[in-house]
Amino acid sequence: MEKLSYSQLAPIIDEITEKVTQEIISANRFGNLEEVLNKYNYQISHKEVESAYYSTNAKILILGELNSKINDIENTFKKYGISKDRIEIITDYEKLTNFNPEKLRNTMRYSDILVCAMPHKMKNIGNYPDLISMIEHNQEEYPLLNRITDERGELKFTINGLRNAIEKTHMYNDLIE
Image 1 (cartoon, one colour):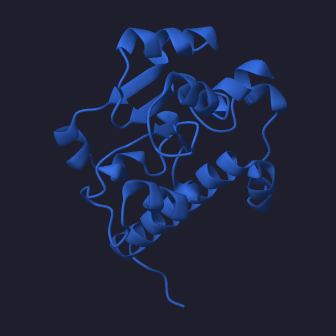
Image 2 (tube, rainbow, N blue to C red):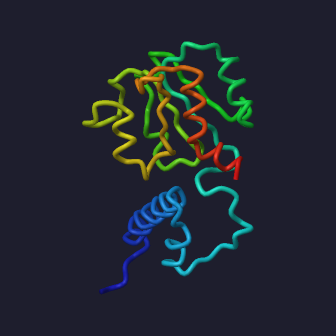
Image 3 (tube, rainbow, N blue to C red):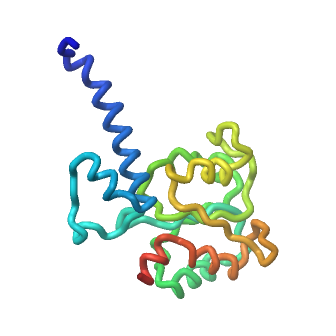
């Protein structure tokens, strides 16, 4: 093969860099980061690793209709050792229907996504019936998804359902380890 010019090489480098970046983020989320790094002959010390899922200032994103006061929700998180500045809540119907899930793809800004009742039709979900299905079918590309459900298992916000969802989050489980 002949040598390529920089202008021919640049898009190849960009594409490979993007693929490797996605591979590393996915491996980090699913606990096989060391295996992927070994593939590239790269090692990190365990002292360098703080969290396997998200950045140190990551938040838990809550999407859906909440029938509780924000203060009650924040207090529930506080009981689990998670401060209110570590949660982001989107409940407005208009904001939810216009929410762009692409901002969640391969991000370390959020450790977890908690969902409850929300609009089925949203922008940028492709052929999936709803956001939850899209994320569940592509979980390696998104922060961990947990559902907030009532005692019957239906998507409905309750404080008890929130407690159950918090206990499944990466953020909470990292705190108790």
